[in-house]
Amino acid sequence: MKIEDKNIGWIDALRVAACFVVVFAHCCDPFVAQFDANREMFLTGVFMGSLTRPCVPIFTMMTAVLLLPVGQGTTMGAFYSKRIGRLVKPLIFWSLALPLLTYAYFVYVNPHTANMQLSVADYTRETLLGRLYTFIFNFNFDTTPLWYLYMLIGLYLIMPIISSWLAQASRKDIKTVLGVWVGTLFIPYLNMLAPLLGYKGNYGNMGLFGVCDWNIYGSFYYLSGFIGYIILAYYLKTYPPEWSRKKMVAISLPIFLAGYAITSLGYIKTNEYFPGNYAYLEIIWYFCSVNVFMMTLPVFLLFQRLATKSRPWLAGIAKLTFGIYLCHFVFTFVSYDIFDTPTLPYALRIVLAATLTFSISTTLVWAMSKSKITRIFIS
Figure 1 (cartoon, rainbow, N blue to C red):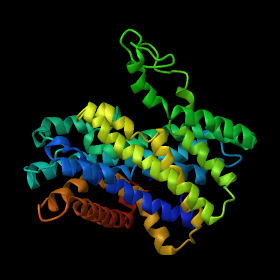
Figure 2: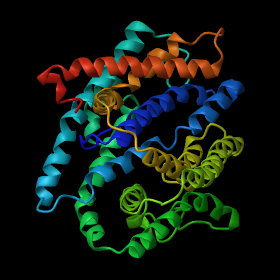
Figure 3: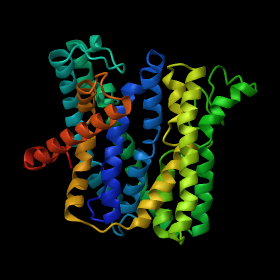
């Protein structure tokens, strides 16, 4: 995903790994979508997909490592123009290209897919037309990965403001803010728990801490979400833990495993109470939930500790990851169908689909990088 083009070895390694994990995550989705239609496929998708949840927080943290603090003398207008301006053309291009490619695949190539994520009947000229202009309001299913660009624009808008505070904040002050943010990671579960404790909502609206039909900005709205990950990344960059390798593993591994257990088993348990209901199931997989945070922090710390040296081949692949992220989604459908055969174990299907999708996407983006005309859409 989009981060500053600086060659820091461990960032390059983490960037490539995280990009592959994003692709892997989307290759798990058709298996998760089986639910009770195929319990074994569902469980395989859940256990493998749950492993991938740190990918987006990791990308957010890498962005903060490379952009914070914002350079002295850089005006907010200049920062916005450079950062947000570079996202506009890729956002528009792929908001048009992905629906067209997906429509072509399901209408002309394989209208009989067994992918449970979608209904091929929904792919008509009328629905295609809607997808081609409604991106001005939001992403759609065909352009699912582009949600990150909308969110990233929001982070870019706030980064110069946060940067000014971080430049003068003490270590204790930053830890205090991070403590509040970690507390907000429990709110999704409090939202689920409150009705069980008798909470009836506010005139039907089940929001907490001031949220109601006429106000979506509750008490913790301004210090929740991905903003915490960018502050956390700055903190770990400025004050890296001075632990031995043995201590790092001894602390990080149990935290990661506990987070993974909550994420995977929690998803399965939630499906028992709300079968196939993504509104509830996605809560367990929220990127800004305490269990995903527990998986993200150890991954970031371990890669940071590895201090991988910068290598030309690794940096080369890392520069392609933004484009790979933008284009890969349509190829997950193709890869699913290619490996949709009973002779292959479900776990192997996911691995093969992710590998093929990543390879196709990498090749396409590499080819696009060779032309000035197409390069602007992938960098």
